[in-house]
Amino acid sequence: MLTSKIKMLMKENPEGIFSRTERLPFSILRAKKNKKTNGGQKMTTLKKQEFEIKVLQNRNGKGFYFTDPYFYTLALLGVDGPFTQQQLLDIYKIYGDMATDKSWSKKVVKMSDLKFVSQKNINIRKRDGMQFNFVEITENGMDFLKETGFVNKAAKIRNNSTGDHTIGIRQVLVDVLNVIAENKELGGKYVTQNTIFPISKYDTTEKPLNVYRFYQDEKLGVNDNIRFFNKTKEEIVSAKANFVTSLNSYATSNFKDIGLFPDWVFQFKKNLFHVEVDSGKQSFEKKSETADVVGEAKQTTIKQKVEKYFEIAEKLPNHKHHAVFVLLDDSVTTKKYFGNRTTRIRNLKDGIGELLIKDAPANLKVSVISLERAKDFFSTYFLSVLETEKEDLKRLNAAINFMNRSSMYPYDMKIIKKDNMKDWDVEVNKDIMKTPFLISSFYKNLKLKEEQKKLSLVHHNIVPIMVKEGDVLTYAKINHYSKMFREQVFKKTKLLLIYDTKKNMEQDVLHTVPKRNKLENLIYQKVLLMPFDEWEKSNHNFYGIDQKAISASDLLDFLDKE
DNA sequence: TCGTAGATACCGCGACAAAT
DNA sequence: ATTTGTCGCGGTATCTACGA
Image 1: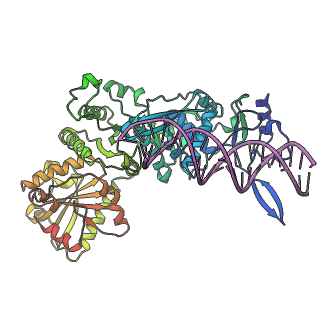
Image 2 (image 1 turned 90 degrees about the horizontal axis):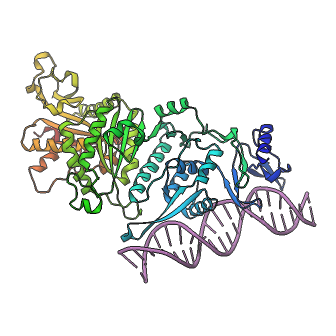
């Protein structure tokens, strides 16, 4: 038997290095070679630790050399697929180099010839003339992965309908995989139900150990040496606690009971990210009048969905919940027509924001973003999971120290923690009390004794808010405050919105103020934006809500205004 | 007719191994 | 030890289908 012969050979030579003169049946082992020149003579030397598997259609040699990147890509397709051909290439690029999509197209055709995958040409958005090549794994391909040890024996093929909604969900997944690949801090692993995928290029611990050819007509049995994907339950459990994990909400009773089925759920260290891909057809509150006709009767409205997130947040109080509404834009279909869909985003934020400001559970955050922002969004959120309150304080201190250092600024700023706020005789609104910190400023050289803790001595208050791009509650709060500003209630209060990066700040859909409306324009004098990545580079800039930089002298004016 | 994306044919390069 | 044919592979050019 071929299988036993290979096993024997691998036992004898576990490193998989064979000299070219050895004649093995069907050229079982093959090592890549380095070419060297030695006195004009061509020399070939065998390079250790480079491995590949060749799949042959017949013994005359036609076939496909499988290397690590192909296995990883095919395994991800098996566990999380289907993907479009382009998306699959993006996954492949995490592991290997590939110059053009044409070459990749050829590869997919080859895998299709081997009957490892099947291709479906789908017409989406016929009016735009868009065609997509959906790639799905076949039973045969799944068997190949199982036999070579790249996926767990229990793994099932994920069947999903094809459509722009599916493309959107997969695109979010591709983005998340890239976020893991690009950020060392995330540990370089992506965990599914049964499998731990090494994603990072920095992770060199997981490597296949042997090289051999795999014949379709004479299948190779499971080989212990390359079963590096098969993990024990304990290993999987520990990985789920530490790395970004894909959660199957359909199989979890908590979700089933509520009737909540997010399109995808990522878990990262006690944070659940529920992804809802929104194709723009669903209305916020009212069901469409033609619902019965077009079969939308069962479709829940977005309002109902958000209320279900309230329920799940209360049901799982030990987790932080992030409901992420991802709006499809044309970037799914072609990179040429990027569109922000800001109007739809604003409408959803308005609607959801009203719900949140009333009675949202504290462990629920709702965000609305466009698909093209998904990668940056998950990058900042995953990284912020690793941050602590200390990080927030660090940012506040950076802002305060800068202002206190300025000789033009005649006040002392102090951070007041939530616990101490009630001791201060400051006029704080219930909403402000919800913030963990408040910045109050006093005239310089004033000694803060007990009797001086009075409103009359506080020059003004700054409510600092750590904002993440897309965050609906912040958006609602700003709207809420802006109404109060209009009523002149908060004379001495300003908002400081601290973003992780300038890109986050620029891309966030905040509030559009109608021009020439003086009352509305009050918000310009109340809100200050601060992108922290710039500050870390000693670029101490504040911005107005119109995204324009505020100079040092303007800042003084800004703070001084009532 | 146009633009897009996948499929296909073909070419040259390098690796390999059989033939000499 | 050298020559020669075969194959994988990436790249290019050109084909197709398709809807606007």
